[in-house]
Length: 290
Ligand code: MF3
Ligand code: CO
Image (cartoon, rainbow, N blue to C red):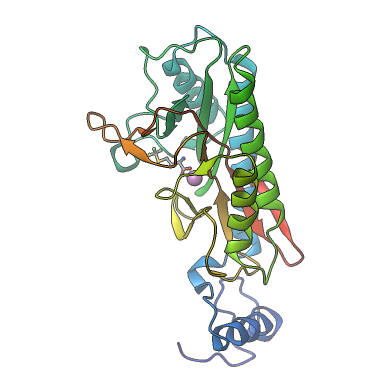
């Protein structure tokens, strides 16, 4: 990379002079890189204007989830969740990001009980009293991507299942709240894995979170199992998801061979997931979709 002069326009796309924009940032990154830490690439750093766009997208994503929350109930086929998500997203001026994404056939993922993630809405999957279901909504609005998911408990469920849902929520919120500039991605994994472990749960290893904003799935990949190393340095302008999948039983999973998407727990135990999109700010973090 050719070094910029202080009066050159910054590499980030803000249009500002380098010295008034990312010069100090680059010095900080270089400081950590020389110490041997993994540091973010420039492609991972968003401008304020881009984060504003992702926030607008996230507000629509939240509204779509709120609409699902108001309507979801026992007896509803998951195809109806898909219909609500598609209709609401389009009414808000957005596009459902999952639709046709790598061949995914629907506008939302709906994953019930032992389905870990990537459940495909179907008229044959009818929500039953006691089910726990993850509804994973992702929106493209103004060209920006946002991604968040919630768990819904249908009527009353087994107290142990309710606890799984609540603990997973706590893990995601506390994981997102630890995010700050010049921290590390492993801070999130440490918080999430400590909470899961303290409750006797396990964390899915193979599937993680991701950078998001200009694309649906960007670098970095974000894991939530007990970290062995600090991992990637966090810097202002990064935007990624916190979305651990937490199993009541063993961490092992398998993929549905017929549809090529849906992931299940190997032991049939229930799994929960919540997801937020979080930005690293100058002073801490901002949750952009919840
Ligand atoms: N929304 C999922 C995530 O959190 C991705 C689903 S990919 C899809 O990353 F194609 F199934 F939608
Ligand atoms: Co995601």
